[in-house]
Each structure stands twice: as C-alpha cells, then as structure tokens.
Amino acid sequence: MTGTRRKLVPYLLALPAWAWLALFFVTPLAGMLALSLSTGNVVSGFQQAFAVGNYLDGITTYGEQITRSLLYGGAATLVCLVLGFPVAYWIAFNGGKHKGTYLLLILLPFFVSFVLRTISWRFTLSDNGVVLGTLKSIGVLPSEFSVLNSAPAVVFGLAYNFLPFMVLPIYAVLERMDPRVVEAAYDLYAGRVQAFLRVILPMALPGVFAGGLMTFIPTSADYVNATVLGGTHNTMIGNIIQTQYLVNNAYPIAAALTFTLMALLLAGIFAYARALGTERVMEVQAK
Image (cartoon, rainbow, N blue to C red; front, side):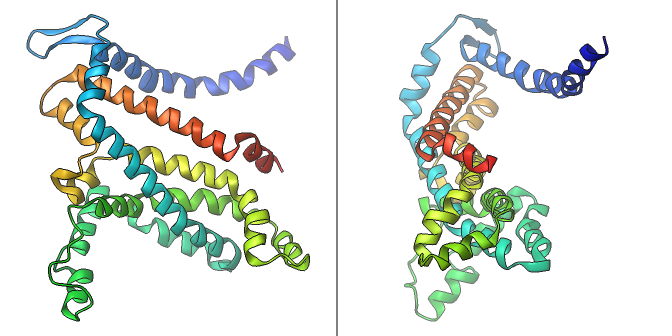
C-alpha cells in the first residue's frame, strides 16, 4: 500500500496544475472551437451547425493579413535573435558579478505597460522625434524621410517589445556553458567563426529554440504594434480578430480565425523544430 501511495504522489502534486489548465485553458478552447463552427449573431443567438465554411471564409477574406502576421513575426524573431544572442553571450561570459544588474536592465522596460512602451516607440520614431528629428536637422536624412506607418516600424516595434524573451533563454543556456570548452577550441586552432559555429552555437541550441518559440508566437498574434506603428496598411490578423470580436460581434468568424492562426503557428513550430533538429537540441540539453 505504501508503494502505491508513493507512485500516486507525483500525480497528486500535479493535479492542481492540471485542474487549472482544464478549467482556464481546455474548457475555453473547447467553447471557442464549438463557436467557430456555429452560425448566427448576438441578437438571435448562435446555433451549432458545424459550419466549416467559417474557416474557408476567414482564410479567403483575410489571407493577406494572416501571411503578413507570420512574416512580421518571423522577421521580428530574426531581429531579436541577431540582437539578443550577442547580448546574452556577453552577459554570460563577461558580466562577472554584475550579471544580475545587466539582466535587470534588460527586464526594466517590462515594468512599464506594454501599450505605453509601444506608444513611446511611436514618439521615438516620429518624423520630428528625438532620433529622426535630430538626424534631419543635421542633414543626415532628408526632410521627407519617414518610418512610422510602415512594415519596418512594426517589425522593430515587435522586436523591441519581445527582445527579453529571446535574451533570457539563450543566456540561461550560455551561463551554464564551461568557458574552458571555448578555450579548448581556440587551442585546437579554431578561429572565432569556427568556434562559434562548431562549439558555441550547437551548445546554445536549446536557448535559441526556446527563445524562438517565445518570440515568434506572441509577435505573430500581436495587434498593438500594428495599430500604433503600422497604420491602416499594415494590419495583422490580430487586428482583424480583435475587430471581429469587439466591434462586429462576429464571434464565429473571429473564433475560426483564431484557430486558423493557432494551426499555422503549430505547423511553423513543428517545421522550426525539424529544421533545427529537436533530437539534437535535446541531446545538447541533456549534456
């Protein structure tokens, strides 16, 4: 009896977490799935009709916004990787006793509301703001040069807001790396590029994998940056879903678009894992 109880202990400890997920994730998800297959409106009510056409209508009507969201999310993730990897590497190997301080500085913007951070980015990139206004006044940029209401503004706004999601996982992996391994690569006549590609990057793959997921998923579904920085010509699918839910009260089509985005993100995640080599990542992490 004692052995049976011991086997049940891990399951009993995990039970509150599973109950929490079932109540606040699985149940709403099932409700949304049923709603995505319904027909009707908020006045007469919604009826379950297994209307698969909601998905087809959503993809046909808003295919451009879906594609744009995935492209913007992928571009922002790439920018975060290019900017975040050197930062994580420097903190891990050169931060010394001040590593905690540097990480706090990276997380410091998160003490401010997400919307306020995005609005402040809009002020920074405005035509007569601190950056562009100064460069125009000294003649570096022409007076008609503008960044706002463009794709780069949205992408860099997304990268600015989600950069810590890339830095922290990579840092967590690199911080556990033995510096003597890199020194050994140099002793074996490896150049900096070879040492990075053959030693540092393979060992950092778990962090790159986790950071990519934590960045790509929220950036692809974001709608705040597209609204504040992109204008009317850079609408993402998150903006469409928000409008369908809260403005048009078209719940079935909004739910169908939500599940379409979720399916595409999952497909992208599996493709990303396959390209990166999940087995290789797990092997590195196990070591």
